Length: 61
Image 1 (cartoon, rainbow, N blue to C red):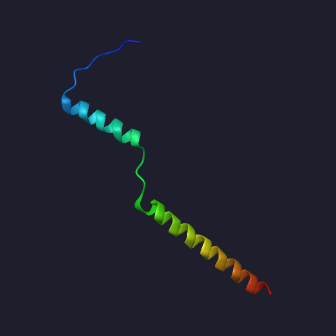
Image 2: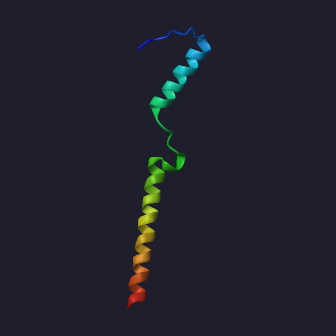
Image 3: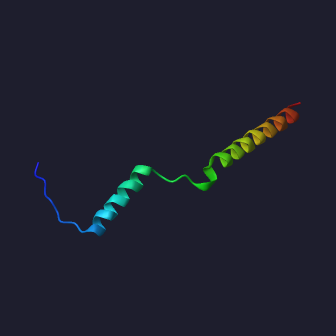
């Protein structure tokens, strides 16, 4: 394997370093997926599921 060395200016090296750091951090979490928002959404889904089951029970009898 032949390795070529390129002369890079400081701007290019900083850009490569910044991209490497961004890549290693992974994707940014959206605001609505923060822990407390996620708990609220989970509670809302469970609550609506409970209401749906109650409606099915009432209509069945």
